[in-house]
Amino acid sequence: MIRSVGIFHARIVLCLQAGCKPCVAGAALTCRRPLRGVTIAAMMDVQAAVAAAISASALFDPDELLVVGVSGGADSLCLLHVLCALPPAFAPRVHVAHLHHGLRGAEADADAAFVAGLAAAWRLPCSVGQADVGAQARGAGLSLEEAGRRARYTFLGTVAQSVGARTVAVAHNADDQVETILMHFLRGSGLSGLRGMLPLSPLPRPPWGRAVVDRPLEALAGAPAAVDLRLARPLLDVPRPDIEAYCREHDLTPRVDRTNLDVTLFRNRLRHELLPLLETYNPGVRAALRRSAQVVSDEQQVLRELLATLWPQVVTHSDAGAVTFALAPWRQLQVAWQRSLLREAIHRLRPGLRDVGFEHVERARRLLISPACATGHRVTLPRGLVLTVGYASFTLADDQARPDDHAGPQLLVPALPVAVPGVTCLPASGWRLEAEMRRPTELPLAWQTEPQPWRAFLDADVVGPAPFLRARQPGDWLYPLGLGGHRTSLNAFMINHKLPAALRSRWPLLVGAQGIAWLCGLRPDERARVQPGTQRVLCLTWRYLPAETLFEHGE
Image 1 (spheres, helix red, strand yellow):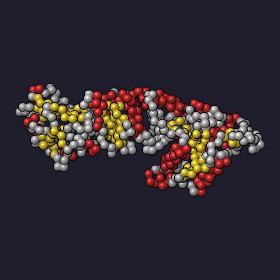
Image 2 (cartoon, rainbow, N blue to C red):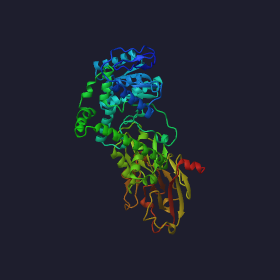
Image 3 (cartoon, one colour):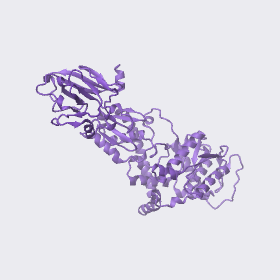
Image 4 (cartoon, rainbow, N blue to C red):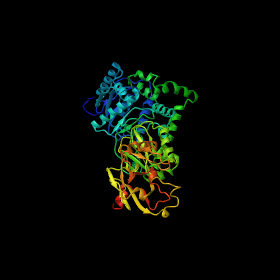
């Protein structure tokens, strides 16, 4: 629920006397209180830091409509005051936004009333929303902190879209940055986490989790990228003590959220226990961590630019539902690039996913480089994603999505006659089965010692004159080659050889006069094997040509 307070946008200016409240542009710039014995320097330092941040990171344009998240606390109150005091070369048009989380009863009611009253007094338009964060946390199995984060960003994005703004500003400060870096370090993070928050990033959005903080690779490579709402952090270089001093010097009376003192919350424990302890080892630890984060951020940007050049070299298909890599070129890359490309694919498919664990990425990477890696193998990834190995490729996609053509052949018709000799193309697929007849003396020298999963040599007379392809049926049995004539359930064989469940129902079987002759790509049937008395050999080879290749060839 969102209600709006205020009827027009106003440019707010401040007189230079310390402690003066804002006045609406056009009104007399008369101080409302006598000059106190304080210096102007503290106020100007915060304003100068914000102006420098706006310029350095192009946070927003002058006179741009900016939605500002205001909780009523010191950070957001300082941010609102500073933005209203900016000179015309930097000043935006401000729209205040406040979300009532439905958690702290009368205190939260008072916070909402305070922000609405402040916006009215400063003649700023204001939107106040309310969410039942507790119910959202219980319903989604989330912590209150995470549920609140999602609710806030959803609300701020809704307000921005409703008023026609492209940028949302929040009051994350330099100490928030230090806490974020430490949280990521303690939980285990790569460079993206150790660089902390960025001054400007896309506004987090569903599917929820980790905020998207990088520019799309296409944008780095020069191609146009989709425009999303942006999240600006003008106070990211301003420490909390300076913010509190700014509020005192300008007679701002922020609201106090007592939950910020609750050390059962992870971030609060860092703030009130761990950081003070670290400062006994290095009094400048906060500044040191921020410097390190800046170095990591700069170097990460260089790495992403290099990643943008690698992406089109190894990715054969990419859309909102799936990303497919060419397996051989990916394997030739250094380990760091292999991991980076996997992470990039995961973030593309789950743009808001938080904390893609090292163990998930590494388990997938180790499968792909293993000599035992074969078509049909797969690895479960976070949030319903699955990596499936195909013929000379691998695909990341939703576990419930229709299997991608790269993952393996899928028969979309009840039965399909096989042309012998000739080529049989699967409908709506890049997969094709090539068949030819040979004498036993014409077979390749290593056809028995170096078997290939997508190639089979069968006794043509056992298979019969009219082989065809079909999918599995209830009661199917297989006599797998190499098991001495032992019979096994076809379904059990598929499961034991890790053929993904999504592929099994349409996986092609070559069927001849005596039944199944080849579980394609996995195992020929013992009954159809080439024996010493075989006169003619049916040579079968599956090949995969992507749809674009078929189109180029006019097929």
